[in-house]
Length: 220
Image 1: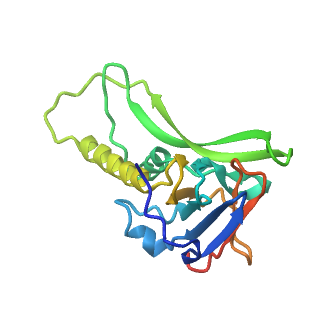
Image 2: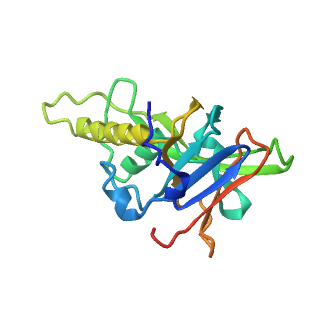
Image 3: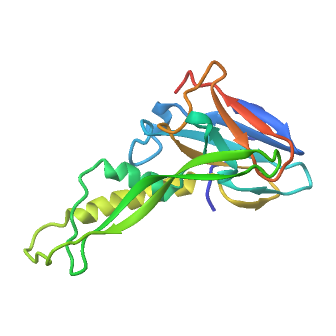
C-alpha cells in the first residue's frame, strides 16, 4: 500500500473537477512543504503534486499514476517520474563512490526518454517526455583490498531511504472503490512554465471526458 490519506472532500484541495462519473482533485505542494517530507530536498528539481481520486458511490475506478500528465515544453506532455528515477537523479548530485570489482564499475543514472503515440480518446498524435533510470557497467579495475571505511554504503542507504519515502507517499496504482490520494513527481526542467492559470494537469486514463486541473503556482 502507498499514498497519503485522501481528504474527506475534494473541495479541500486547491482544485477539483468531475469527469466520467469520478472526481479528481489536486494541490501543488510548496517548496517548503517538500523540504520537510523527504530525506533529500527534491524541491529544486521536481514539482510535487498531491492528487486524489474519488470514484462515484457504489462504483470502482482504475488508478494509474502515469495517466496524469503535465504540459511540457515544445507541446510535449510530461509523465510523472517514478521513485527510483527521482532518487537516482538526486543522488547523482553527490559524488558517487567508485565500486571497483572484477567486472567493472556499476553506475545508476537517470536519463530522459521520448515517446510518440495516439491519444485513444481524441485520436490526436501526442509526444510525451519522461525520465527513466539506467544501470551501466564501466571498465573498472582490479579490486582494491586496502582496509578502509566504505562510503558507498552510506550513499546506497541514502538513495534507498529516499526511494522508499517517495514510494510510500506516491499515488497508488490499482482498482479502488474508495477515495485514494498520493504524490506525483514531475521534473521541473521538462514541465512548461506556468501561465496565469498555473500548471495544467490532465487525466488521460479510462474516461472519455477530459479532466483538466489548473494548479496555481504562486506558492511554489
